[in-house]
Length: 131
Image (tube, rainbow, N blue to C red; front, top):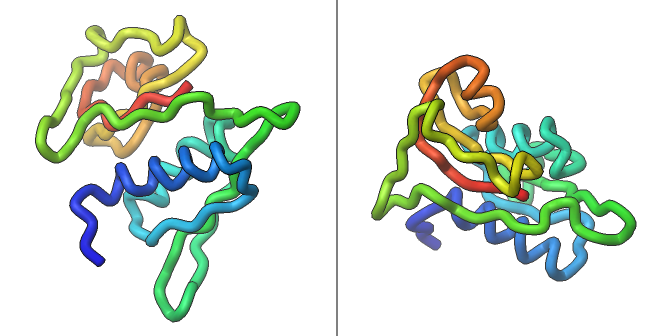
């Protein structure tokens, strides 16, 4: 199976898992997706992630987070797509939901949240928004 946009696939698996109230979802493993999900864990939107082996292939096991039986992530949306890349300077980044959400940026120093990018004055590709 060929995926045109593996990052969107990973975000969609998380979104669908939250809608179906799953505890854990699996996605094909890549270092980039592992770093993306680890950032969401660090920011408190997900519980945990780990690399597992399913049928001899590496996969990413993502533990979803719920607060009072409601998903911790209300909305997760892809911003920059393979067909249309979105870049932003640190000064041009708006706040997501008045500071209650975050953008995930791909910078020359790795993936980071918009708050970290603003504090380090680094811009980059805006991958997705989470709230």
